[in-house]
Image (cartoon, rainbow, N blue to C red; front, side, top):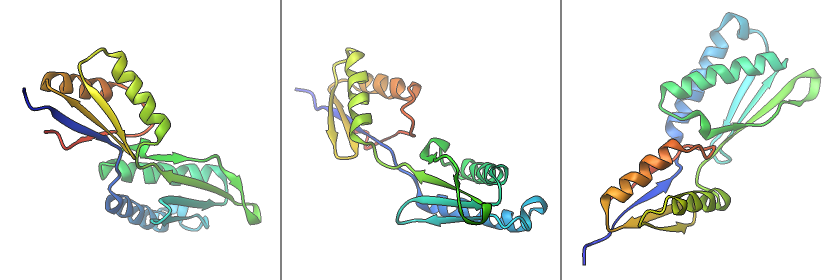
Length: 165
């Protein structure tokens, strides 16, 4: 019998690159003429994987999100990896916006990916393991087809394919 090949579908974010983008954004906020004296701040909680933006107005918070997004793109982080909440009113007439860094595949998304792969009618076996999926098949061509299919889909978070054997 031929040895089965497999790969893992994961959703990971390089936190060092996120931190570097955050540091660049902080520097740009302190130097840019339109943001320098606005009183806007951005914080990163690595443990909670959370961005917190405090700004005097919704417009300013959107500018900071744009700056951060451009820095994340330059560092190779997919923008789907950060989900932004709606702006909330904070003390002193300011607004607060929270950005959650999405990492790992939750059960609902994993089940949806599993169902979509099964609907392709390929000879592959999908197993859900905590926050990742393992796809196994005797045919490497079937695995390549699954990878291409998943790249074309949008599940609201970036997917990477690791441990291809």
